[in-house]
Image 1 (cartoon, rainbow, N blue to C red):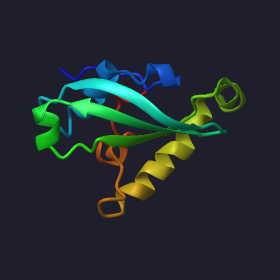
Image 2 (tube, rainbow, N blue to C red):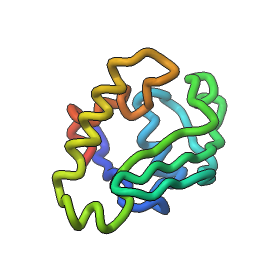
Image 3 (cartoon, helix red, strand yellow):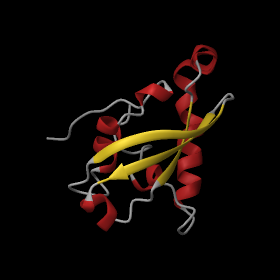
Image 4 (cartoon, rainbow, N blue to C red):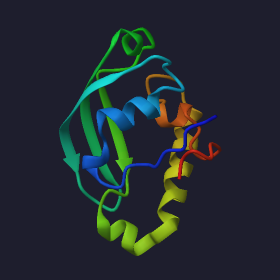
Length: 119
């Protein structure tokens, strides 16, 4: 049975536990041991750069040491757009999915627009 998960609503919600669950479909056996925010660019869609520490399974799967998260982490974004905030992000993920590495984000490989776990 597939485990349902929520996308993080705040930067603090980007935890090792959440990221382990999010990365498991593309890196089975991964454990994210640490997430350290390196840089934040606040805006309508906030961009977060984080350095992560993963176990050997994550390294073997090619998970990079730094990840970029982009989302409606600001209350005013969610308050203004409500449920509609996810649609532009799904469109962006689909656009990135058409690119080749190293520009393809992990979220695109997880197919958030088609996977019902992403709510």
